[in-house]
Length: 322
Ligand SMILES: [Zn+2]
Image (tube, rainbow, N blue to C red):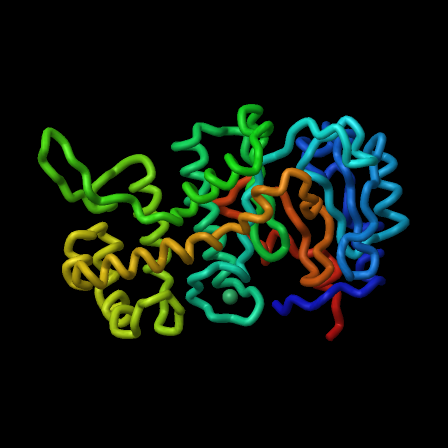
């Protein structure tokens, strides 16, 4: 399936025949009046902003008449959304764009089935950590058209400032190599990250594993030579069985340290940190059309079975003649 842009006629067909205002997730509909809406009418970016809708019927009419190129709503709740003023709180958001995954096995130009699946695996890993380590539960996953948005609405995170959000991102993606030297009663111990089965070292191990299993010879990693990458590809079978000690021995401890350091810094771009720390961001409205690729931004009920090429394709794509 090729991901070509939607024509104005196709947009009209989508919003008048297929789209239903009730497809907008409840967590947005029930807080509609506190959110800012933004629209892109020409495909040049969302410059129609500061829109507020007093109820879903106004929003429905707007979408039907204007059939925008793209629609967005704020992650922030405001007392005065029309002026983006009186900030109350904001969802905690993690944006995983398939195009920006630092270590991709597909090497495609834009997005394809392979990197979208990889993005889904990353989202799985992040959600495990968000639930298990951060103890959060009000989590919604949305297919954005080119990747995934994880939107967290637990009250205890919605008031957090940008600094805390940035720390959470770093923890989730594994962007620092955990320390390996510990000391106790005058004795020094060396514990590699993969020998600590909990907390941050475990998160780091999971992210590194995901990266190593997708690495190819063209992957650019700081100070990691082609020989190291060849060795990784030759021995990474061991990681599927979690034989980390053996794997490190095969790579060599010095080269291993260089490898994980390089991956840690690439991990920084697993999610778009700019999105997570922006307390006034607008995000693509779930249920709206991503006209650039002709796919529906979709709230996901079951991530396990979700397939964008089945569940996020608007009807008009199947009716195309060429
Ligand atoms: Zn791809």
